[in-house]
Image (tube, rainbow, N blue to C red; front, side, top):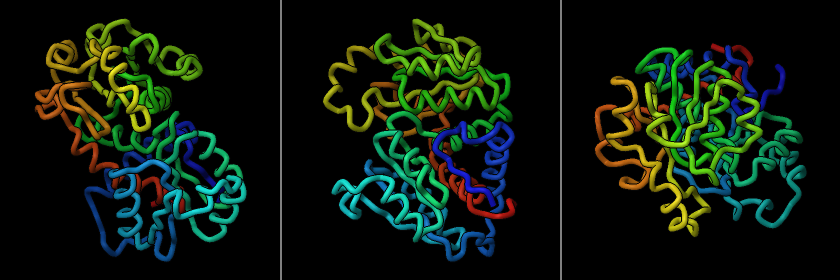
Length: 302
């Protein structure tokens, strides 16, 4: 079995991405308590950033599959005392079957993958959040079918979520409209690599026109709290509200990876309204994570 990592969506082929989506849907709809393909296996979960959905979904997923998970904060490992990453990766991977990291620098995950003897999963970095996109795309497929050829609109910060949406557009062949303040656009390297899959817009209203899915995230992500006031000014015209959603298609969905700040990046009537699928999206973190763990750790995929 070849060692596979999941540091980015681009670690998958288009076919593999769709396989994981459909497998997640199948696992959700047909839970078999006797199906425990990871019995006896251990997932090490390293958290430099706190989490609700990431921790619960991976930990519960391992339990459902008969395995177990270890929660490790910087206080629980020598990482917090400056042990070289390659040493930590070699040691930890010699004792567990998989490693998931939720951390600041993307280089931390890629370095772990380089020196690990077991699969490494990116649970979030400052640059990408690929696990969330597995759940988001699963949710769209459940509600609307395949996303190929559709139009998705990202409004707000050109952050790690936006970067992973760019990768999803490349792999699943949809168009991603992006509306961000000039100083908060996604990294040029991501935009350039996506080619015609990405379109940049000056206003949120323009970006949302004829969209099938509208997505946003908080204006100030974890670690950016000191920029809150500055960002409120910069993003004041990048809120998803009824006007923005009315420009999208009538059956357009709304997604948000949560936690959300109602009245900032999205109004309460939209996030709590009929077009919002945020709680199905959140639950699907569990099912998508299970499909990913199965894909990476099982010698023969189900």
